[in-house]
Length: 428
Image (cartoon, rainbow, N blue to C red; front, top):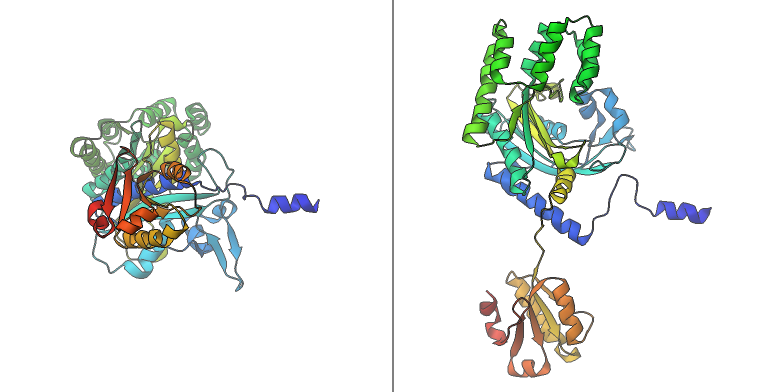
């Protein structure tokens, strides 16, 4: 019994993962591609703590989130939580320290997050999230730029089969008002809309005594929206026409200026209804099946909730782990990690010279590994091939005597002799 207990302790916790060398190389490749896209749009990186005050997340998402997160009391009795997402911490950081920075402020971030979730494909208890926030503007062009950046991040990773959906929660709320759906009734039907359960949705609306014509028009708008249809449906509501015009400008920018063709208007996007306040979007990878969403975000209001001064704000979160799974499903080939040089000392007498050369090369910016097992030349070359070394430097007693080394190109097989004093210039 004790033995079984010990084995359990030494196993990885449920919902977490170890990553192999190759997996970590692939993850770093994806991270750098995402980072370079963020920075090409003028975004700057920030970082926040792994744990925050519990109240930060209950203020944003309500007390119900406590059942979904890792919360605890520290030794001082303070209520803390491992971050379940990164938007709230970044906005807390902004309110606390960055409000006086020049606007717009463009921030991006990477970090591990934690949710007490049922583990399944693409969903883990510890996962990596990438995301960004733009603060200080709410123009159509700023929202369109944000959405195009999210789309281009995924395209730059090589994903081809992705779909962009845009909606607008201000417009959706006005539609709710038109068909006289109270907030209590909205809470019941929103999960049905989110899961595209239209038959259940129609039954629920019938039970709410909404007439069949309104139900049919409502379902039609959710399934097949275009801007003109929205404008005609809400033409008597002057308060929302400006928002519809703004929404149309965003759509036109995405299609005509950013050349995004696989875009559809979907008023069924109901994400974060409590704090999202305008245009929202989602990007899906159909290859993932039911759990297909890779990215989501939009225009929101959180700064005021955290006692900051009102300011335009928008952002998105990208499912890092799920994106890597989608890349695998689309058979995207990750580049192999290489090393510049592998040094093979022929015998014990050449080890000191090999170490000296290796250190000199590293100081000159090259990635250098060296045989540390005193293998014969054949086995050492085989190992060099396994770690994708570009070149191999062979050092034997004869080479040391002549102050030279032999360099073998692992791709072409060509081998040549180079003076040690000329080695840096030769390699560069």
